[in-house]
Image 1 (cartoon, one colour):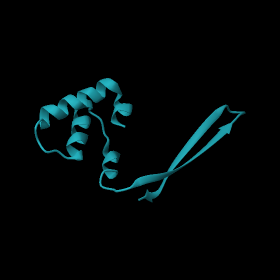
Image 2: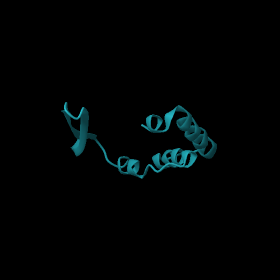
Image 3: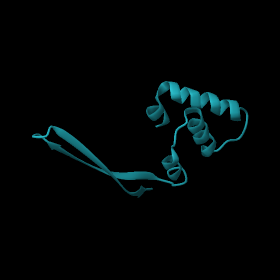
Length: 83
């Protein structure tokens, strides 16, 4: 996900910073998050809510197409977790 949001260059910057800070150390998900955030001056606070939750999220996706306006819309809604 981080690579998709940051692109290859931004992701690489985050990885480089992560290893500079934590090479040969025990780490947490928060350490990885902080390196990605700090290397790219990005706000990924919403990512932290996914880390402590077990299971696979169930997401409902709906779409609609308006031919007259030539628009396509997607809506995503978090439903629950499946264990």
